[in-house]
Amino acid sequence: MQNTGDNVFERSLHEKIESTLERFFDSKDYAESSRRAIRSDLFRFGRWYVRSNNEPLDWSRVVTRDIADFREHMVRVEERSVSTVNRCLVMVRQVLAWLVHDGQISSSPAKNVKELRRQPLAPKGLSRSEARKLLREAEARQDYRATALFHVMLYCGVRVSELVGIKFSDMDLGERTGWIKILGKGNKQRMVPVPLPARRALVDYIERRPPIDTEHVFVGERGMLTDRGVRNICRRYSAITGIHLHPHAMRHTFAKRFLEESQNDLVSLAAVLGHESLETTRRYVQREQSELAAASEMVTF
Image (tube, rainbow, N blue to C red; front, side, top):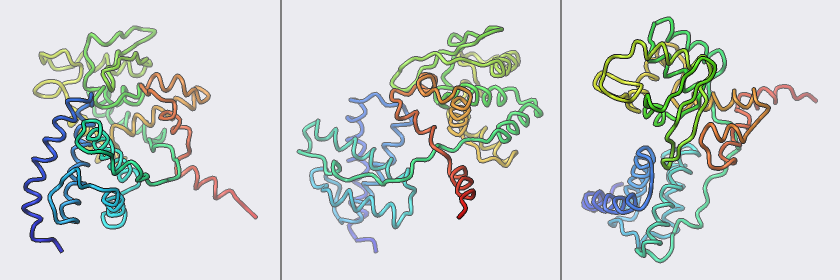
């Protein structure tokens, strides 16, 4: 049952968290998508805190028990996935660590609260038949923009935020080779090769691109295409094809196919994807759940 003081405490929660995040973000170089995730997770913790403790959020009064109980609440009451719980813990831990560095609290109560353990599995992407069906459907509909978008994501493995940021000056498309200069996380640049099918799709789209006054390659009705616009296109083609489709699934698809064709060349894949650590890239070597299930079916006694 909700306590009587909750409404009062929750009214002050927004101001408390926003003032904290304003200073926190000023000291960090986060992409907008990361900022949204941190804000969402911190508010999730804040709302849980005031409802569970019947007191306003005060960072100096947050204890380890709060973080551990919040983790259990997400698992048992909200039934969140392991990845969601762990992401939320990481985001909250980052803010609390910064509060220590900023001198607002003496130590982080989240330091000793462990993330949930899970079996490492490869991120799920599209099968070859699903990728072919998607590309064929966009081509059959003469949807040149969607065709180009899907080709760049599937053949180049770029993030959706990187995709919408591509400008004409970033591209060098020739008959034999092609490259795109990508501005990735932390404003770090990398050069990504563009295979022939993606080069052709880009050229076809650019020839028919509406004459909108922007240097960005991909456009909507009013200007450059946004992250949300790409996700809307993915949702539309999900409904058309029956394939569960989102931009990151195509990045995962590229990574898996790259490893298959390169004899598991993790170093090269990390360079193309823009990973700073090979440990991040190594997850693509893991097996998917369906592959594990198929292997288990082969066991006999």
